[in-house]
Image: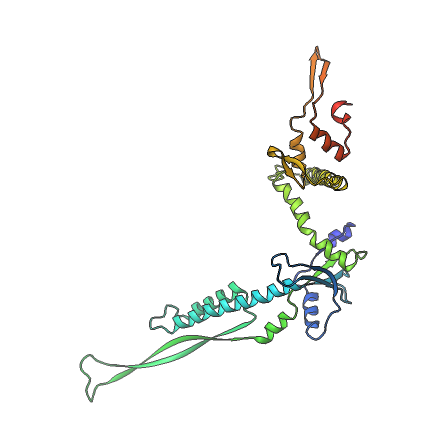
Length: 335
């Protein structure tokens, strides 16, 4: 973040849960109610009859340690999801602890050593992330039995020896206080930004647009195949990546230009898919594929061009060029 800020860049990102500012706010909410500002009130996308999807924002008085702005976000559906997931994980962990307790009480228990039992308990708590809510203790009990010193039928003078065997057991308690503490801030997470010109709603909107940006950069690995890089000099690697980013920017601008032009002209779709199927959101890949066969043929004689056969653009190709604002002369009349 410091590097981006020092270079004049802007950022909006989720603040890590390990930050002290996160813990301080969650502790503050135990006795205080933030003045949440409603940004979105939308229908439930997954359940039409379910609760509505409400999104709130709140800006605390204190900034981050770097003096960046912090904006807390609260999603009601995320709150319900986290509460349900916690209950589900607790139930699953308790079920496995009960099964472990039953196996420890069996006549021939396989888990006999203390270290082995502690490791198994730790795995269960870690698998379901409930170590904060379940306090498990290992108990050692002694079982005493008496055996004859010698073989044979016992009599009045038979001597016996005492045999002591350790039996392990586990017990646990649910920390309802920790559950209530975390439930108070379910569905809430902090965003941190260095752009103080954004409103709270704009910070949330910028954050929710992150998947679109990540999807675009994903194309560097897939469509553009940026890796592997067979270069060692850092300057050359930076130069190569700059070219890739410029290509990515041009790709995004082509798509935006065409989609905005379609919207302005009230064009719902274009037959860009194979077999002329309708395409509602054209991509640059679709557009370039459309012009794959648009070729210019030049006839040379003694190293000189004697005749040029311009490409025969289809009606659809001309229509796309007009929407993109590219003159037909770019194809028909070379400079």
